[in-house]
Image: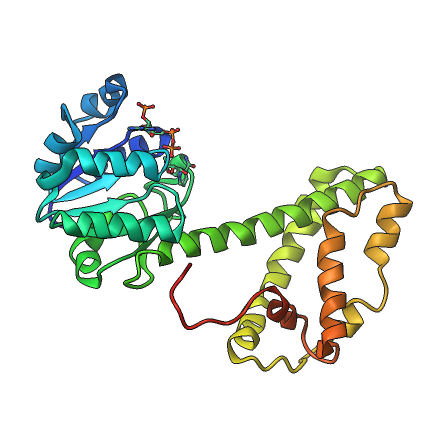
Length: 296
Ligand SMILES: NC(=O)c1ccc[n+]([C@@H]2O[C@H](COP(=O)([O-])OP(=O)(O)OC[C@H]3O[C@@H](n4cnc5c(N)ncnc54)[C@H](OP(=O)(O)O)[C@@H]3O)[C@@H](O)[C@H]2O)c1
C-alpha cells in the first residue's frame, strides 16, 4: 500500500459500491459499509469490513465517506440522513449525475461542515482495482490532495478542478466519445455483414488497428479547436464531403444511413459556413459556443 491505512466508509453496495469497498479493503484500509438493503453488506463484511446500522453511523466511523448509489436523489437522502454527523469529514460522491446536481449537493455538504468531492467513475466494476480504471474528481484541491493516496486503491484518481460540476461533465464527454466510436462500429459492422464478410475478423484485423492509428490525429484536431485556427494540415473539410460514398454504398447494400447521415450533414453545413478549406475539426464550431464559464 502506498499510503497509511485510513478509515473509509462506503454508502451504497450495488455492483460498483461493492467493488469500491473491496478495493479499499484490499489496500489495507479500515472500511465501514452501509447499504439500504442490509444483506448486500454481508459480502464486504465477510471480507473484513465493519457493518454500520445507518449512514450516520458509517460516516462517524470514517474520515472519507464514499457515496455510490443509483442517483442524486438517493445520494441526497443519505447526506440528509447523516446530517451533522458528516462534520469535519470528506464526502466523495461517485453517483452519476449532472454538473448542476453535483454543485447543489456540494453546497449542502459544505453547509453541514464537510468537504465535497464529486467523482466520475470511468470503469465497470470488474475493472476496479485494475490498471485501466480511472476516476475523475472535482472539488477543493486540498481535499483531493489529502485523500488522493487513499483514492488510488480503486482507480487512478485525476483531479480536474475546483468546480464540483467538472467531473460529471468530463465523464459525459468521455462517454460521448465512446458512443461515437460505438456508432462507427455499428455502421462498419452492418456494411461488412451486408457483403457477407464475418464481422469478428474484420474488427480484429482491420477496424481496431485502423481506429488506433487514426486516433493519433485527435490531439492535433483538439489543438485546432482550442486555438480556433482550423488551417488544414492534410485533408480539407470540403474534400471529406465532396461525395457521399458511405451513404451511397450503404443505401445500395440495404444498410441504413441513420447513424452516418447526421455526421455527413454536419460536415456539409461546415462547408456552407465557410470552413471548407480548413480542417474538419471546424465542425465543433457548429455544435456550440466556446465559454469561459463553468460547466453547465
Ligand atoms: N456499474 C457501473 O458500471 C458503473 C460505472 C460508472 C458509474 N456508475 C454509477 O455508479 C452508481 C451506482 O451504480 P451501480 O452499478 O452500483 O448500481 P446498482 O448495482 O444498481 O446499485 C444501486 C445502489 O443504489 C442504492 N439505492 C438506490 N436507491 C436508493 C435509495 N433511495 N436510498 C438508498 N440507497 C439507494 C441501492 O440500494 P439497494 O441495494 O437497497 O437497492 C444500491 O446500493 C450509479 O450512479 C451508476 O450510474 C456505475
